[in-house]
Length: 186
Image 1 (tube, rainbow, N blue to C red):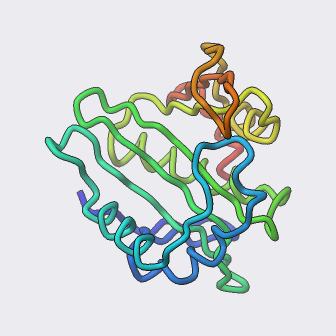
Image 2 (cartoon, helix red, strand yellow):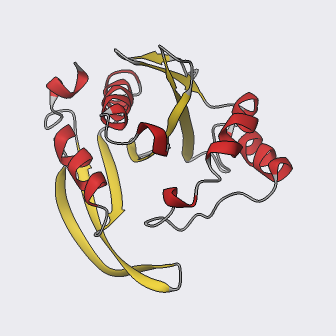
Image 3 (cartoon, helix red, strand yellow):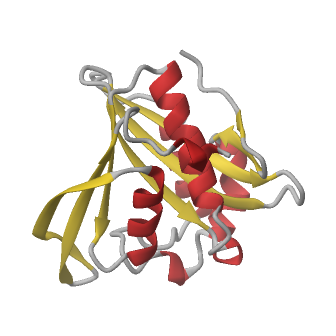
């Protein structure tokens, strides 16, 4: 299946490609995006482009995981608002959902709007069975977003990973078509 452009009330969700590299690279320089994730700001535009090119293949070897990533673009300003990342297991049809909203667009409900559209698309068009959202337990904004979509907290993992030299505890949320809050699509 081809990755398609999705639309919400305020956003166009464009399939992420190398063509987005320059604009994304600039926005991912903001250190405030990284307190709860293992990533750090990219240091080389060329390597960042190569990484997007690799992800643009949309699958890993031996093709058990599909990478379906979108860039959130404001319909009004055409500004890049953030991105939504999906890793779909082609056997179980479960997908990991991750998202980043750039600082200028925080607290506007745009990540919820984008994640709701992507999740609905995954359930309807890709026949996904479950969305999995994992986050640092200190990331209150992500917890609120997951819960607003109808996701349920199903696990707590102490010392799940090293994060900036410290152990990070994590929550795991799960969302399925039956628990998804449809009003989040409006």
